[in-house]
Length: 291
Image (tube, rainbow, N blue to C red; front, side):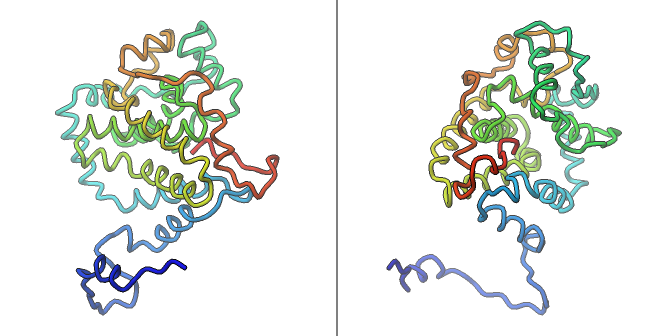
């Protein structure tokens, strides 16, 4: 039987200081730890299995809303303004406010091999909705435009990076965006922009290590390829003028914006089943790709 020894506790916990408080509830110096629902959701989503009763995407909106509610929004707005002055592409993107809310008819004319043709195929045949988050949001400021456009470009980023909508591809795209954000933006704004992404990455890796070890090598490779590609991006891909690129080939877009080492179509296509619970028959399993 494995047992952590007294010497181990003393070595790792020797500097722990106990503070007393008059509070009648749990309280710490962290506003995140102080939020009881966030504590519960993060513990549940990192420690539970995946099953047909609850997809891997469950409670993402709740966690995103709580994290937003806990932000120092005046400071976030200040960072937006400061970065607009420092970064011309970011300023131009926010000033133009071009929404990538494509409809099938917008790209029906696009030739095979172009981004627009891929968009049309996705809208017509994938069964997914490109308007994945903040549905119905009114864009009336730089901040609401950022939120809406970043959601709208998620599947476009899948198309041009080669990181397909599957378990491996989702983790690769998360890693690429994290790396690109920290390369381009100041650390404080990059951290804000990646709150939810880091949560998704952490819970996926934690659950796989606990329950789905065959998924872990795939996820490690996906993160490595994502970080490597994101480091080479010209700037975060949400800033691309997507509506002006629909008649351009994906290969040209990749060359122009530093999108390197894109996996071939279908890469990691079999990664999702590795992260599904083997206790349930395949016909009951919930897809976890759209994480």
